Image 1 (cartoon, rainbow, N blue to C red):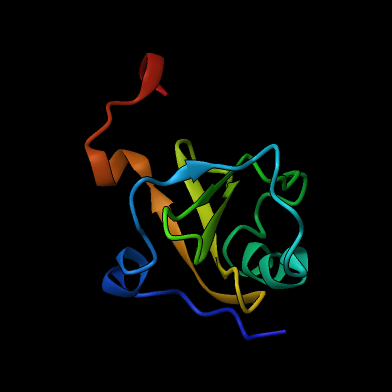
Image 2: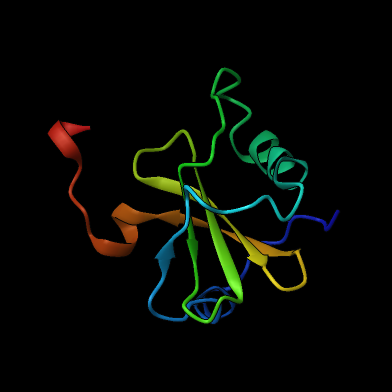
Amino acid sequence: MPIPRELSESEYLNTFSPPMVDVTESAEELVDLWAYADPIFEELYSDHPDWESYVQFIYESGNGLYQHINIPVPKDDTYLVVIVDKPNKAIVGHKILDLRARYSIAPRDGV
C-alpha cells in the first residue's frame, strides 16, 4: 500500500479529463481504499472518532485513466479525494478538497 501523499494542485488538476463522469453506482473496487484513507483520517481528524467514513461520489476522467473517490470529512463541504490510476489499479495520491474555499461557496444556513 502506498504511503499517503497529498498531490500538489498541478498534479491533482492533471488527473482531470473532461467530461468527468459520475460512476458512483457502477464503479468496481480497484484498490484497497480504506487501507490508504484510514491513516489520513487518523492523522487529520482524530478529534472526530465517531465520524463514519464512506464514499459519497466517484468520478471518472473522460479518458478513463483516473477515478476521483470523494469521501466527506468532518468539515462542511470538504472531501478527501483519493485519486486512482484506473488502468494500473493503483492509488496516485489524494487531495483535501474544500469546496467552500475553492469556489467561494457561502455557508448554508449560517453553518
